[in-house]
Length: 233
Image 1 (cartoon, rainbow, N blue to C red):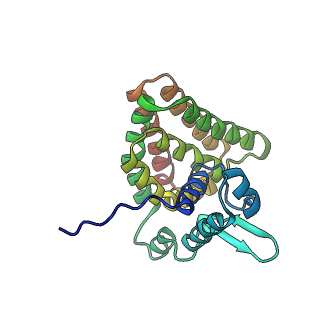
Image 2: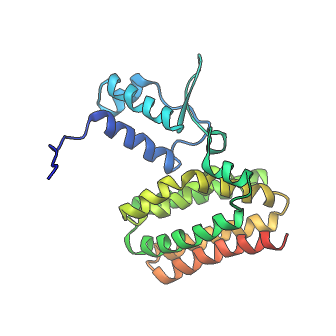
Image 3: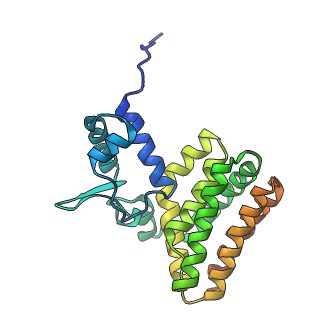
């Protein structure tokens, strides 16, 4: 048997995981500048070396980017080099409908589990995203991709299922770009954006009310609405 010694998790790995979660949950949004190394180190009570190692790893992954003379920023998924969805859709190997079919399977189950397991903190994260979407629609007649994607990730984190969370972490770029494509096409149709916002509220209401089947159905209604919207065009 090839057993290996168990090593304690390095501080830099813990810093990496915490910053990565903030990006996935939408607390750090694409284009946003993150705090300098020194301030992050103080806030997290770790060394600057640990923060630097974590940031370098996130830069390598494409989640963060260094801008000369400006600082470190959260990169946008659709600007990342070698993005798998962008490459697949560019060659027409994958369509928006293919993406929505996958989301239908993953996210309806996530909503059901979230209704059983979401904490007050999880609910607040969902509500924060909905508030941002509502404000966007009221002031710009648009809904931001960041707020929309953050809502769906908040639902996923509410499941407390490490496998589902892992899948959605790796699916994040697909989710972000898919939502962006949806919203871009819907910008000329305010009624569609209003419907999308109402769908999110329905998912949230069902999760908050601890009604798993209703949450599942509300998420299914939302994704199928988007599917049908584009199939008719």
